[in-house]
Image (cartoon, protein in one colour):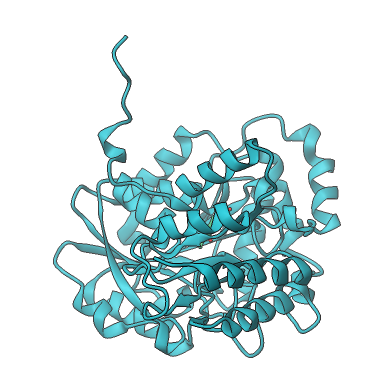
Length: 405
Ligand code: PLP
């Protein structure tokens, strides 16, 4: 047989969060080393458990979850999602606006496949959650990165964003609260982004998976609430983070705005939804219980709660390291610190992260893995408890004191 190559479609597709750095971590593990993996936002390994009601509901429904469901999702889950948005002020949301998927990840892929023609430009934040850039590329689109401004709490630079629009631009992606920066956008920023979309006839794709993980006075504003009836907005969210069940693969996309103008696109999206039959049915049964009733996430995001305390601790400890600065996250599960290039002249940040991994048995993700254009950042997951986080950041500090280019 001839050697079998990957498709050319994958040529520029990257997903570094689980890329070569993870391969190296697994190699070290195979040699018997214990690696502290702070490279992905996976809650379960850090002692976060799903709310009991979710487990009970899924278990109860297992016997009747054996068949395929409606490809858009089971009725109770879609109703619960629609009612959730109604209760958040999006009163016109109906069950027909909701599609359930195997996590936001699957829905991003399906939406972009149904939406993008070769050469279409899609505005994506830098830094971004790299699935967005990878999926746009895989679908034949061109990701055009708009820069988020570290000096302005990692808010997007709206002028630069608007200047990047061309006649090929078709959609604007925003991630709020943001992975990897932890920014939570102000109302003015979200409104401003929607206004840009309105002026330039762009579809808005709002990844709001961290919507319930916000700290202190930060308020999450649903993008769709400013899009009204004239801007098509696709809102993505799910159970992975706030309900600590990323393994159940339960997410959704909610479509709002001028749907009558999007009927052809939605027909294509439904076709793709049908072609993959349905999303994992037991996972869908978790959605109604999760969205109703007591919200245990609210305990985790206030003083004394683990998400809150760990985020604050990580930012504080990182800022104490010489030559390191970290904008304090207002939400989500990550810190995205900067290594001052005058102190740490890093040429290849992936190689830097691999050196840290080999020396300190600690895995973080390099900033360019999030399509950040410079080699001066990395992302740390703030999920470990205070003791482990302190140990991890201590190891980073030790490494930096001896590191030479
Ligand atoms: N969107 C963002 C911004 C994320 O950070 C993640 C996971 O880390 C996802 C989407 C994927 O979510 P899901 O587990 O629902 O596929």
